[in-house]
Length: 135
Image (cartoon, rainbow, N blue to C red; front, side, top):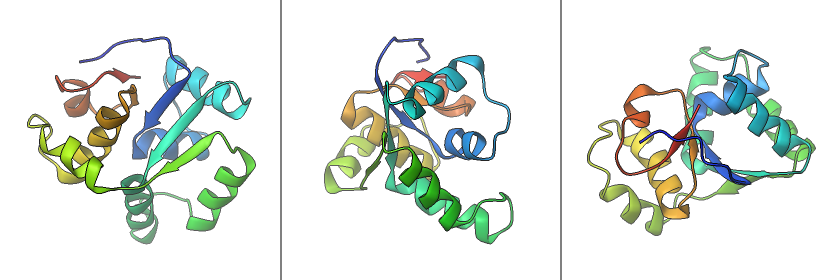
């Protein structure tokens, strides 16, 4: 269920963060949120699964980022907060039955657990009835 909820805390999916760090095209809403985070005016929680997917995409050369690039970005902008994939995330994920891909479900489950909007351009996640999305 998509929405443009005004908030100061968000969760990001993999492509949202990749596009930001690689300075690629984002929607104006997503760009504004990332700008606010990097200015210290908002926070984004980054699910552990996002880091795992970024590693995979980097190793397969589907993105131009290394783990060090990601670490440097997080260190430079401390309002990106790592959020571990915990048992509570798994429990939250279990209820989501309209996002078939497990990695995407885990990211969506993190947003659901935190009750925060998820920054995503994935149409399947955007169509989920279990969370609010922003793009």
